[in-house]
Length: 247
Image (cartoon, rainbow, N blue to C red; front, top):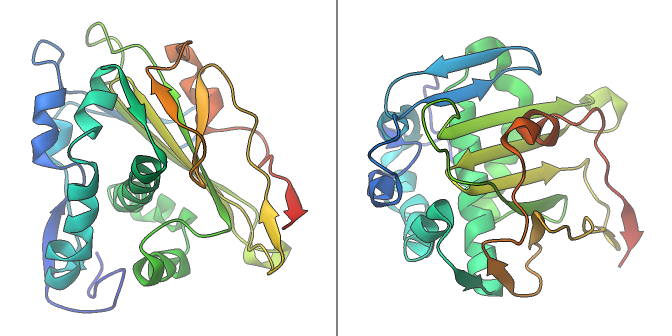
């Protein structure tokens, strides 16, 4: 358990809901609230408690009620619709807000994991996010579409953060994936990109679109749903497939 804020090092610490309680409007009350956390390809933890009850005590009151709260407000008008698959158009401003909220949420979900697997995301990434309040130039973000879970056989909320490499091998990299209802968001953190270079975006697919850096308008829902059984392969690719190009 952190003794100081994971973002700014401040105190006192307060409890933060990993997912905001106002997302209740987006969740079908007939589907039981099961959450799965994938610790590896073959290891899955199932939580039968409502996912909106999850709290962590790792952020200070200033961060919790300040800039972190603003990130929640920035997505409040459209996030429930993404989760339910409601038709809409996501512009560049909404993509930026969604990418920042997704990164914040992935970082908070990291602290629901047991201590032995919590270190996938280095402390420096928390500090940098506090400084810039959005993903960095060493990150890509993707938005994917799945059909809403029909019943309890499919997790309503599913999350995984998979690490690649070490500091000794050229920099820690990771992929954080979060699924809530129809919405799949993914933050890809590559080794630090030097000035004058950038990460090349992934190819747009019928089931996946770029959201960071913000790009063209995204018409939601996407034309093709990712099969539920593909969640593991999407969240845990064998290698980090990114390309660095000159600006």
